[in-house]
Amino acid sequence: SFIAGKPSTDGAFLLREIQDAVNSAKGWRIEAENPPFTISRRGPLELRQMVRRGEGLNFVFTVCDGATLFLREALSGISFYADESLGYATAKTCEAKAPFLRWNDLFANLVSATRVGRDDALGCTILSADYSSLWALGFGVVTREVCFDEERKVPRWESFDGVSGCCNPMQEKYTYQKIERDPEFAPGEFAIPEHDSSFRFSDERIAVVNSLPLCAAGGGAGCPKWPGAFGGIE
Image (tube, rainbow, N blue to C red; front, side, top):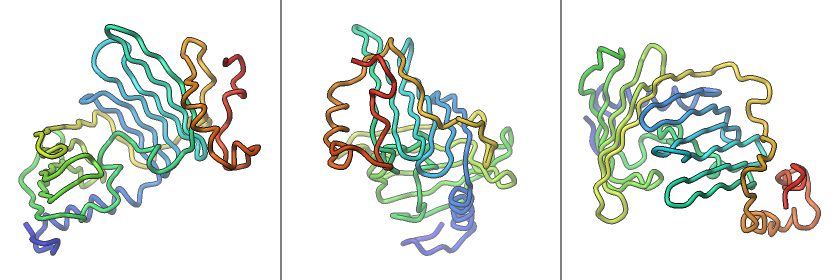
């Protein structure tokens, strides 16, 4: 391990290898089974992501085309909620579900990093890293483990054991069933979908988007595509 952010062993070397692999990639395609989601990502502002939540029709579908953010979400249970909305594509609004894609600097707040073994079934090396805090991911003090395929330069799974908020224990694990680094993307893979009439378009969110000064004044090249472009939306 190494202390106070000063590398002293191969644990730090592997952490740097993971960071370089993530930062140098031009794009990713990921399928996860725990929790279930699929991601296509090219750069910080192009994303196509489906995240399923529990049983039934519960999901969040996100598309960012470089300028516009599109959200379609549904929640079933005692009542049913279905909504579509538009906004600006930013690095924050277009964040990917896979945590390793949200880490620009794996060394920030790092206390120690150690190689702890190998997952022979998946052919990846397990790294354990302790952090003083990871508030960007919603954690306080946290231990992160990642199993990294050093030949393919991809993570196969990662887990977190920490504290959420002031004092709530939290454990999460992400298992990547399929992962491709620098894949070929289909034409239109990041295109904004047409409006689905079975989903309500949120008046509240339209009001927020329309309140942006530039777009309220008549729009421009950097403005989202407006709801009227879909046609038939009240």
